[in-house]
Amino acid sequence: GTAETNITICRPPNDAKIGERVTLEGFEGIPQESEKEIDVKKNKVLETVFPEFKTDAEGVATYLGKKLMTSAGVIKSG
Image (cartoon, rainbow, N blue to C red; front, side, top):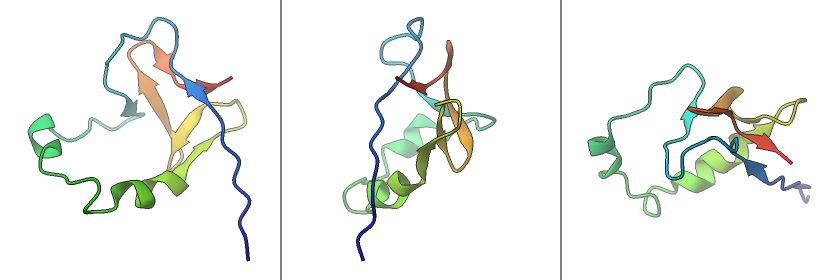
């Protein structure tokens, strides 16, 4: 069968700094040195994580139910 996919454009708050790291609510992340070791194409990271990106009822972008955050607040659709 075919799966219906809706694409929603999400934006950081206007006060977010250009180039700042986006984090997940309650998650510190991995050290930047470790990120260099991850081969995104080879490990098919995007194919694995993309289906888990969603927006909640308030339009906040989430990954596995955790809000995507910047220092200026949450990332939202619209």
